[in-house]
Image (cartoon, rainbow, N blue to C red; front, side, top):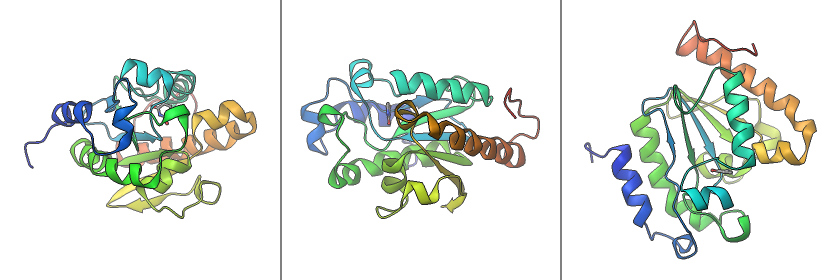
Length: 196
Ligand code: URA
């Protein structure tokens, strides 16, 4: 297993049939970003645009995520890796089923092991439930650091929730402030952000 790379995982994801989502996908979406990023963002799963393009967070919520990351001094080109709990689009954008999350989880765990991020941002309830605890509540846990397998994890709201409810923008910016602080503390004391 030691020689598994991000590219090999991506190749496997494209032909994966571990769950029923493979039957309805156009393209699988392995994830992308800086291969040794110290920050990793994990979303729920591909939507329409991601399924069309085979890339994560390229639709409206992706543009918002890119904007939040950019203001915070992060980008998928320079210092951040972006992945999802499930790699294939659930039909009609329904929530991924627990068995679909379970089938896909080993691939995400391998990506986390290879990228080896210091900080993980969980975007929304599915990411929180899928990685940490199926019973966890995003409304209770957002904005609070948790330690998971030696990494610092910050749950926050999913960008699509912000698009539906602008009142969530403020808490998400507060959460990203904490992420910037932690990144300066643990990764790069000189990290530049336009925001904080
Ligand atoms: N929403 C997600 O959770 N992931 C994506 O890749 C796109 C939208």
